[in-house]
Length: 242
Image (cartoon, rainbow, N blue to C red; front, top):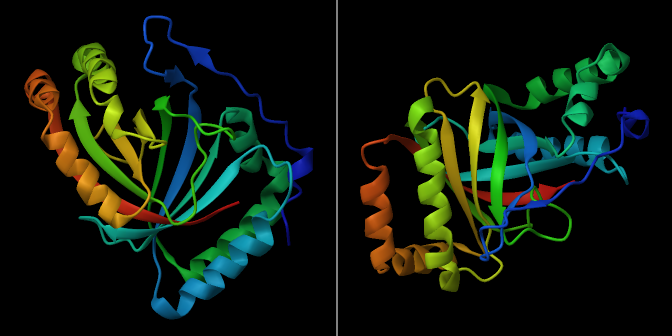
């Protein structure tokens, strides 16, 4: 049964340019809930069919993305993310109004996958924002995540360092998204993440090599080495976004 999405509050779209930055770093925050899944090979196709049946709805105020995990230090094979610039759109899905539809979907999801963890967070900054919004994911693209633990007092310095490195590495990115956000629940002591999109795995390898040849990267790592603790990294491939 499809969730009656059209009753949910329509998504509000907002983009707030940071005046001090000319390198196209935009504050277009969006909220996301992630389900990290362990799916057996025989259940991958049925899972895709379930998502296609449930979320192939026009004009819904949120996006749903399924990604295949390529590299991770966790026991997950796929990642299911619900995202929206309007937090009320995600909150509405959890309301009593959609309880029956939600529970029906979750029963079918648990029949096809083990839910390893549930994580929620906010993407705070994004470069090269796609026309359809910061949370747009391109099918078959690769996404690398770097997780880290940062104390609240050091967060402003980390953000400042991130903003400084963006223009210094702009020439490496052509329609690649470089983003930074925070975890709110579900990731333990891990507080922040940086992500980067790539067109393919070879693009990922070549781009990372190009970054490491930049002297500015050494400066960046030196600035954050005393305020951030690495907490793992993940590479995923986008299967589809609804």
